[in-house]
Image 1: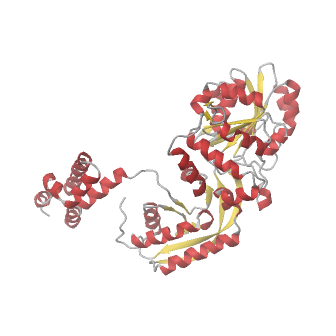
Image 2: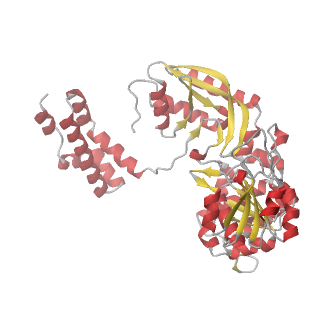
Image 3: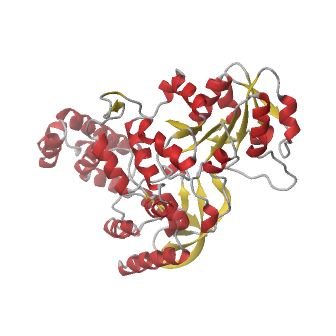
Length: 474
């Protein structure tokens, strides 16, 4: 292997710049970017030749230099955030963006966001308005609360509530409800950042009414109830329901706050799932302030929604922290259109993707699985395709014990390993994210809509995903 010859065969920058494909890229993008990429790819090639004894591969990389430059330039200009197809069966997949928003809703959001809007302008009065006004009345109508607002996530909700009601004072909470909400963020840490002093009562598995009452002092500013939506303690346990805390709060003139976490507006028990406390139930029980997520069981955008007594919500709206935590026009508009579907439960189930996936019958999911399997077999891919029953889950820290019967398409490649196939599927133009079980790719159809079937099949075939010579580049 004569490395000097290999080095001499690398085209000079001037020669590459005369190539028609490179000229096209300069016209599409910019000369500066293209030249920078050329130098980077040439340096990568030189380093490979320097460190490798594989002459055949070195020649191939030299021949593919212009093609690699093209891919590199295109890759720089391609947005890093991309749509993916969720075949995991986890409906609220935190890593995949949690609740998907319907196309119909996003079309309206786009029509508002691509121009000017009345985000903080009252069309009726012709003067400055409030961004919460677009959905506050809706939330009050749906939940029975007196007032409402929203911030950028539920952890921010808790921080704003405690900063407003309990800064420098004590907030009583059960030790068994000091949850970690994901990403190593914990309720006690959020409380500390708010400036409130945490007073833990009870034990991990049992907290009694008297534990709360005995902890109340002149410094107590609120009683906090945290719904453990992302885990369950079973066995020898006891908690104090919100309905029992409300009279205690009234007795001592202390607001009772409930952090519901997921926050559901429809009783899912009617659809075969275990009962999850609804937002309406908390308000009916007399909670002064309730907060919950917008992008979990509600099926909307990332947001922390706060509802409750007007006197407390008004104080939060005036808190200086609200400015730092406020939602933007995308979130405000999306909340508006999603919440309007909740005026009819039937419409919400049909139009909100999360609710539709949760309530979709096993029969319909099986029909989808059979259709996708038939399409994959018709594509004559070098793999064994089969149907297999499986279980989906809610995810996103919601209903942790709940499993929903589902149906999957399993794929076992013949010429490559299952790990290679899974990696290649992640690098498709529209990535497909499956599960891997028993050395097979498992695609759960509960989290995939029919409109994606054609994309899945065409990509697997077009990019030779099952062949040793795959066309996908990373």
